[in-house]
Amino acid sequence: MAAVSLRSCRRGLSQFLSNGGIAALSSVPLQGGRRHKSFVQFASRPDLPKLAYRRVKGKSPGVVFLPGYGSNMNGQKAESLEEFCRSLGHSYLRFDYTGHGASEGVLAEGTMGTWKKDVLFMLDELTEGPQILVGSSMGGWLMLLAAIARPEKTAALVGISSATDHFVTAFNSLPIETRKEIEAKGEWTLPSKHSEEGFYKISMNFLHEAENHCVLQSPIPITCPVRLIHGLKDEDVPWHISMQVAERVLSPDVDVILRRNGEHRMCEKDDIKLMVYTIDDLIDKLTTMV
Image (cartoon, rainbow, N blue to C red; front, side, top):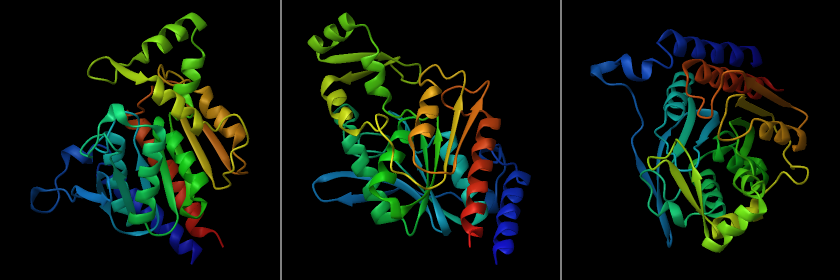
């Protein structure tokens, strides 16, 4: 049975790559001139903003994609993972946090606690069985928080440019005079080429709340397989953060992959191919374990 599962998984990956893989998302039509693609749905919660999501039903373990701060579920990594999971026949879920993308809410009013609740709600309500959580940037922080809170729902973790504790540690690394100025103003203007405005405005309330969710000060009680991919040319989140995560998780099965020319978004074709191979290898491992 294990050998059959392994062959099936590799056949799915081969099919994904032979059909054009990453490039297939925009260049190769399927039946009727349209590609199979999930459609946007909305998850309702009592007294909380509705969350937009796309879901593909399939085999376990499923894959859940967690985007970064200010990002959404329609990025290239998220789209490519859906195509990959569909080719394997495994379930897949991607969604927008409160205040992001098509979800309700205001980004500036969100907190790490808000988005952690979003992730846990989606795991509890829209997935079946253990999942491989794939977190990009801030999503890499949220995947750790989710794995700690829901170990029974977490089969493995894949961090892409993980920004664990990053808002807090980046602020604390500023000169003390600069911090005092920001605290007096109540808002930190953080330059970012990934924002349309060229910066993000982070409130002191956000930073103080985020301190409650920092995990790098002590051992991280996560025992599932963990894979951490980071680019050495990441100008937004230092690659040594992934090394710190690797050092602190209790799992005996942890790999760090550093890409010499990788940047923060890790959206180049070879970056996404590496992500896909990494997840395929984890699916093999999880489905062939006796």
